[in-house]
Length: 402
Image 1 (cartoon, rainbow, N blue to C red):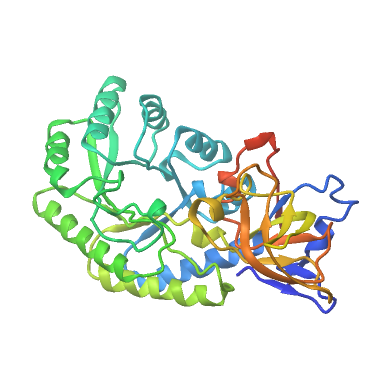
Image 2 (cartoon, rainbow, N blue to C red):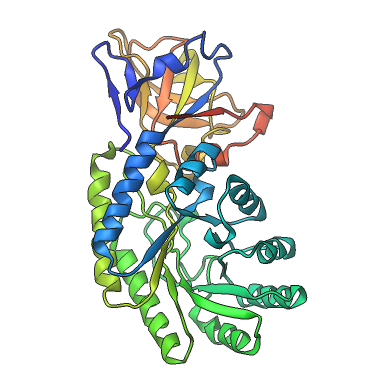
């Protein structure tokens, strides 16, 4: 798994690579912000995740990486070469996945707002399945499938009505959320499927939220999904698969050491919840695979001291990593070189004309200087993929360390 550590010269290394080398004027003369990803870290995390699933499940399973977490082409190629499928939520993501070389039968199309053009795109490509989020969407898919004389393979995403105990902006399993089909709407969907020969119901799906660390809510959601799954089979529906989504989180305040225990606990929840269920199990992980394997490097422009508060002003900010501003998320921040000197407690902020433009508040440093570089850790998920051109700042560069 990815590791950040200082060498004997107090220079920060990322999976053995000295980060100062990546921002040296000869190799990076523009001194612009830089996302750095570790292929070694990605491979190690994926191998461990697979090993836990294989140990925990008697059923066959497939992993469909949630491309929205990080769509860097090198990461997509690595996962494709390792046999993963892909989970997309837009026609653009579908095109990117197919262009990289994922086969249509590896593509799951999720998302609550699929347009007619996007559905046609999926039908023409022959993707594995549409994860359907409403009766209206199901009717649209069936109409377009009939129009194109295609068979549409669908999976019904159920909203199990559980509290995922995460940030409200990334909770998707509440009754109040826009995602998934409420159980009261299920009969309407089943009637549509029975009456439309162009629809094939493959299974059920659920995704209750992101950044989940309280696994008891997963136990509750999996239990509800299994009950509905078995009820539909008893009604004569030939269900093949249960898509348990993704959402497994990590502790951003700690190193990767705790992650193994969380993933192993997840495996135990799966084993207990799905024991004896005859179905193919699908997974849609994102963050848990890529977050630790990425960092954002940013250069300090100014150290601003006031009687009220101190600021470390960098050339990257919320336009490159919006999680702290949007979710009040915590990211560890390290100088690329540690030195002795004046102690400083300051907010680490960016250049954007918003007061919410910060990476961290009240962070402590020693010997920090203008022109130094900082490393924002655990930036591999929902970093570059959510970056914007706000204030006309350019997008950050991205590199993958082989």
